[in-house]
Length: 258
Ligand code: T3D
Image 1 (cartoon, helix red, strand yellow):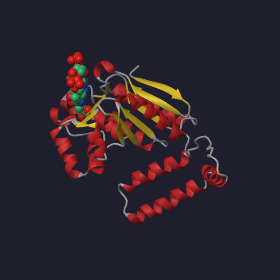
Image 2: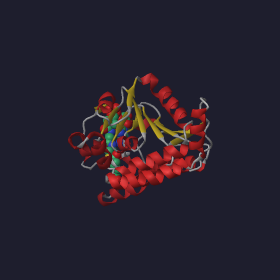
Image 3: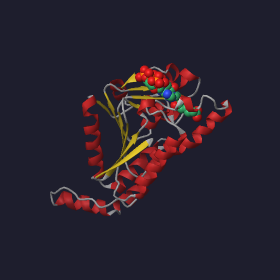
Image 4: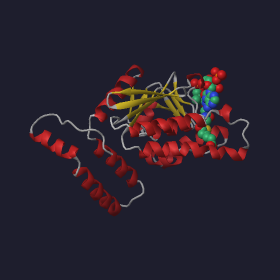
């Protein structure tokens, strides 16, 4: 199986599983990943997702063996499979933690950047490898990169296709944290467990608000915050959060409803 799914209390772990090819993506794998995310959403007990890779790499991007004999004008059609995956990650009404366990190249790097909180092992690196093979950054790379690291760094990363070490990616704000290799999975599981214990509707609405902010002016964003806050405020989790604070006890949030 190219994608493994493990159920943990409150969250699911999805592992890219072609370690002999550095988890290079195929269309089937992208579709399997999208299906695994759909299944996570359908399960009301799943309140967060942890995405990682098997073996020494996170993901080496598109499997180049799978496209070598394709007619040149068919290559873009592959994105009909990859784009829904990126959109699914962004639209999923729960946080997605990405544990980048090794190199994240090409579409693999941008798959990681589509997740909500990205942790990387200190030995991992991010390579916008596209320019090396005469392609442009896809899977959202041209959208994520300038927003995360600014235009100057985005352009150099995309055009030079040099590896960016995990520490530097964290320093530049491209990812949340770089951690010692042996701490990656324990830290990622701890983060997923923590997120799974939080108020699920509020996290889903936060995700929506932050994504919309990329396109909105302040007036529109304030209107959106008002509308989404009205939903969050009407949720039983909000009432429980306030009660728990006043009663000086930890909150106990209900199942995911969104
Ligand atoms: O719609 C469209 O336009 C198509 C979509 C395109 C999106 C993309 O992702 S384009 C970018 C595709 N990815 C790349 O160009 C990266 C290619 N890989 C590399 O540059 C390097 O392998 C890495 C920097 C990722 C890692 O380097 P290293 O030295 O750690 O490993 P290696 O020795 O190069 O690779 C190990 C094996 O994995 C090797 O196979 P072998 O020799 O042991 O049989 C290598 O061929 C294989 N491998 C690595 N990446 C890919 C791959 N096989 C197929 N496809 C790959 N992408």
